[in-house]
Image (cartoon, rainbow, N blue to C red; front, side):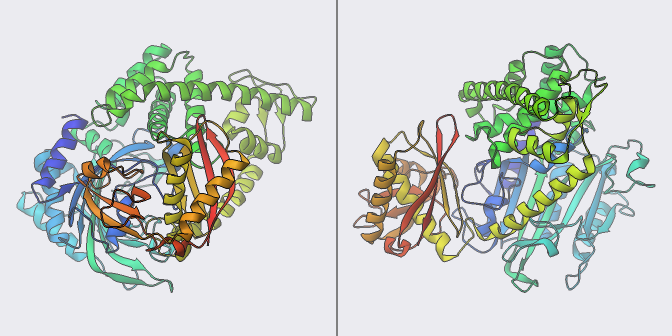
Length: 611
């Protein structure tokens, strides 16, 4: 049973239970400043978990492409990947634990035919006023007993660090307005020998690799309040997430995800291009495979290497992959990219159409990386005349120590990681550099903490104004440059609007002025704004534009600005969008462009303010 078979079985299983399939949301979330990438299936569903009505009903199912940047440095072991696919099913105020847990159990044991003796379960032990989840534990106990397996020692309680889920982590880290709740998780026991470096004794939540989490059901019952308390949602929800890659290793009883039928063909391509064996070079080959795979999907999402946001993560992935490919003495990485597309094209056929763009983007970034390495050597030699400029892989005898400030400069300005700097032949006080990095990250986090108020769930006045201004700007740009111009991303907060689009040059001052004037004219005309739920194909026929074409599959939420009637084809703007918006454009008050910048080959970004 391969990955595609698991996906098909999962979707069919829950469709039979009355769930409607929703399509894969973009890997780069739109209008959500809380995160750079979609990291779970529930992320695009936050408004509906908080009570908004979903067009397809209260039972949903899908498979979601996901990426977690925090795992980049962890890649190299046998289970972690940065890019993964998440199987998800949701109840939006419909069913709850008594339905979800038996379905969860049945899918794993009957559909995937996982051996019962290999499965272990964790449940929530309670937190302050939130009770211990004895209900979930009793349901699991009944299921094991009915299947003829002694549940003793198979059901364990853990706290908020393991069995509580929200996008921000445990309750104390949740910002006001965020939903969360206790979870129950299922682990697969591979029976491998415990590594004592992870603790004296092995346990289900041990990180040694013996037990691997397959999936979890989150019982989304609570919402964080401004005063720090957790109050119950009017209707509790279920959010199930199961990593496809983890399901594959369990079905194949293969503890190394890179040896499964999903990833081993890519590993084989790495072996062929390097002439090395996975058995003796597993670490390097895992990093090459994972990072080129993730880079492929990020470029497919119209992200290009840069020094900011998603582009910076992409740059790190490509450069780190190339470092380890070079250590393996590989020369041509294109066949590895071809192997990635071959393995994933069934569920993502657009990878085939976009392959040339993906390939050329990575080749161009590798070339820039070589230039950055040379510039770094020149910088060090000029600043430290006695330094010898090394080469990656050279004998590092007689290396020169440089200051943590210079390391941070090379990191922030040239995109070189500490490992890459050491590979150039230079040493530094790693603790001092770590302290500088921590201060930098703390500063970034303090700013990011305020960002939760943005995104589709944000109801702040200026954010709502910004959504409407974005639609006006999008249409004005298309009027100026033609219908081939399209949005490639956006990020809207109460402080500013950020809009990305395809254009191969900088806007002139005259064009910026014209764009501002057009948007402000539409604001002053006080055009009506409303949305309608329309069949997706019909929406396309009447000229709807935007990034949310497939959000609701057969039915989409379409916002109209202007026009003399509902469903008006003569509206100024007709766009796919999740909202929210003002009801009349005059409420946007004003629109001012404050900056524009290049995003990469053929793409621009505009920053603007409203109000």
